[in-house]
Amino acid sequence: MGLRARHKADRTERIIQAAAEMFRTDGFDAARMEVIAARADVSPGTVYNYFPTKGDLLVAIVAREVEEVLTAGEAVVAAPPDDVGRALAMLVNGYFDHSLVYLSKEMWRVAMAMTVQSPDSPASRDYVGLDGRLRGQVVALIAALQARGRIRAACDPVALGAVIFHNLDAMFRAFVTTDQSLQGLKAATDMQHAALVGLIAT
Image (cartoon, rainbow, N blue to C red; front, side, top):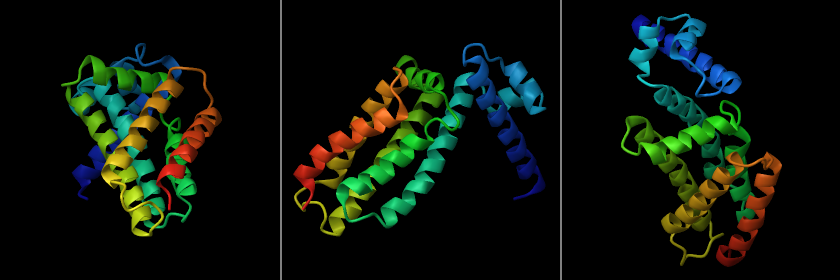
């Protein structure tokens, strides 16, 4: 990486960190791009050049979260336990445990609302793309378990992975819109997966 690219990466990192901290402490609506710029030690113009809207900044934070859970999830997909329920729990609990590292529940609600209110915006399309990558990883885990003979051959891994992911997405949306605890979310997910595993496991 050249010097110019390193400087840009450093500025981007400082902006994302400043925004994440301010969104968490002050709330997304109250946060001002000019204050984020000051905290990141860059000009407001630089912030707007990298992230035209607060929504773009928020999705950049979501992207960081997703990239990290995808990286962690690769290890589960590469060497999952033979027990289907345990394998699903390892992958999904990794997603859930990391979900509040960079984002608060309010930040997740705002990000989700953007995809409904402005579905054609670049930020919304990026968010949907991240969801697609997570869904793809769930599909990859199902395929890996099926290749080991742990899931019935008649199951379509793409369809099954999509069903599991979309259920997780719905449960996560309920989590961020209520006072449900992280442990409560994981317990509810494990209970539903146990019923599903009884139908698909060999």
